[in-house]
Image (cartoon, rainbow, N blue to C red; front, side):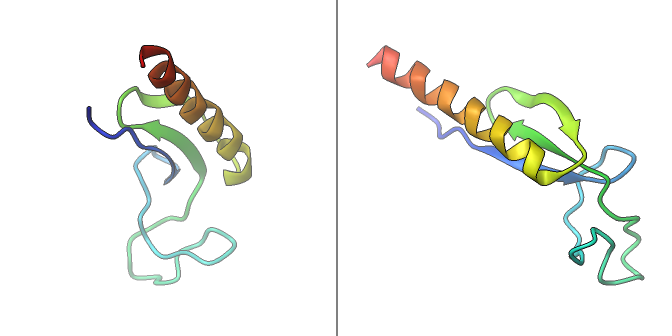
Length: 80
């Protein structure tokens, strides 16, 4: 069985993933990187895709991440 990962991904304003180095304010550290800064965070599951709607703060996305991971663990336990 393949490993399922559930992670919180930062997003640009246009919905693309942001993997640029940023300061604590969410603005890019390198002004020449072409990054406009982080606007929101989404929960992404390797099995299900996007979980719910993007959140404005990472701290709001983390409980949804934990809850979704727990659902997969419960499903796995039920099949054993």
